[in-house]
Length: 283
Image (cartoon, rainbow, N blue to C red; front, side):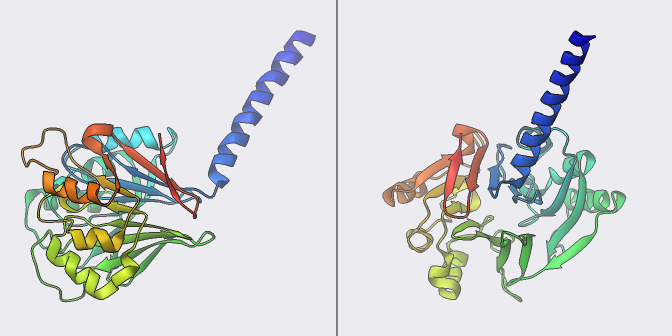
């Protein structure tokens, strides 16, 4: 009897310790950003200290689900918010697989669909089948992720009525947590970078910059890097991709500013965390 009671006490102790650690991990004031290794495309999971998650883009295929499983808790079967920066297939195709695997609370959209493709149609049908609410966002809007810690995502581009290619109409987001900031640039070109500099100036300064268009030569001007002045530059790019991304000149420009480069094709999924004072790399 004594041995049985001792065993029961030990089991209960282990369970309580586990619960304590789970609660502790949920209560820490850390913002986690995972740049998922999904091949040639973009997909970024932002997780606030309160547990709210925003998935920005979902890559070209179902690989996103496998990578999400590596950075999310095994029992987590929901994602609060999803947002596409634009409708290129390497940014949105994986959302269909995400909707099949996870319960998605809401999709954030900028404007109306600009593409009539099978990929867009399949995604729209999947959203209807899963009864996912749609919320419109616009330039200047702030998407609150954690009101207690004042963590929000600001939509800074495109402006109302702005014209351009689908890449240049990418939704540009700034993630803000206290003294730390992260800039997500979709596939914008140098033309839009110049417009952002003219509109925002030094407000663009951020600790982390997601390099535009997978490191294409059409993006990441020297002037833009100087204004943003990041500590980390993250390049979402697939191994040995047919486009030659990232461009050697872009890499030289980044290196010339002594910015640490983090690439999915070399390092797999890149995870950065912020305590509100600085971003650090989670290895």
